[in-house]
Image 1: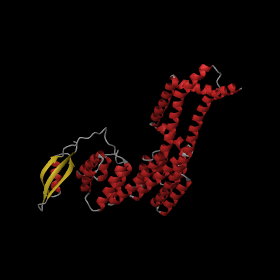
Image 2: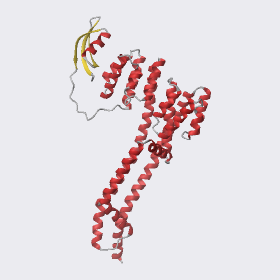
Image 3: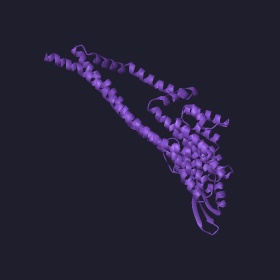
Length: 404
């Protein structure tokens, strides 16, 4: 049954009149909730729906979940009951999709489910990491502390994602401009000059003939065939990546690409250490933590290395030994993990490694940006310059013949 927002008015035991809004499945449910709060309902009516234009359901973003988590942690730390916290957040959350999810979670908790079990029903908003940490927080009686750690964890990785996206914006714009300029020259400018050269009947230099040939190719069926081929390759690659073999091969190649591969590896190390450290410090068993880390790795090669490590740990081996054999993580990382295991401070050591690699990711992003910018500018200059020079060469020849 779909939830509805009800406007209510009621009287407390002291005779004070209170008003408010509640999201519930029925009017009877609202009355029951009010009575549990020692409020005698006077009027309960469904809130009129406002007319809004929305194309598709609003997705739940990482930012929405972080804000929800921070607010929930603050309320629990202040001593409010969990159901009341969820009721308030379900009403106040701006994202309508998350609001519906929170309302459903509150209903499940009221029905006797644990908070973690209720969250597990909504994997699109709350992933395995979130659910397992909440379950560990409930079991240990430190839910507010766990939620604060979760919010901090999500904020740090949101920062890394923003850095990588912002680093890709400028090169993408330059590449788009380069492709647009070259296409304009080939489809519009070159055919005009080619027609002029044909009327003169003069033998054209080789670079000019090459440019005119490419222009004719792109204007005819060749351009359509090329566009279909590129689109087909992209679609085929996307479909192949959905298979286990395709994802393993492409992720392995990505790790070996110069500069880009270094960045991907550093992000993977930062994510692995930060996630596992957060889980262990929150009370999640290491085998369960490794399974969650593998599921959220984002790279098939890293995922398989972590799963192999988990298997070795279940057989009684240390964490550092199988990680060093996987050849995915740098030796420094495995050595620091070994020290953390020996001293009994593995979670603290993983946190220090994650902090170090956060800075390394910053440096790698800056290096990637500084390398891509001049390369794209050179590509744009050489491509456009070659076309322009090739089309001006016949004019230079005619000028030389006239001068002779």
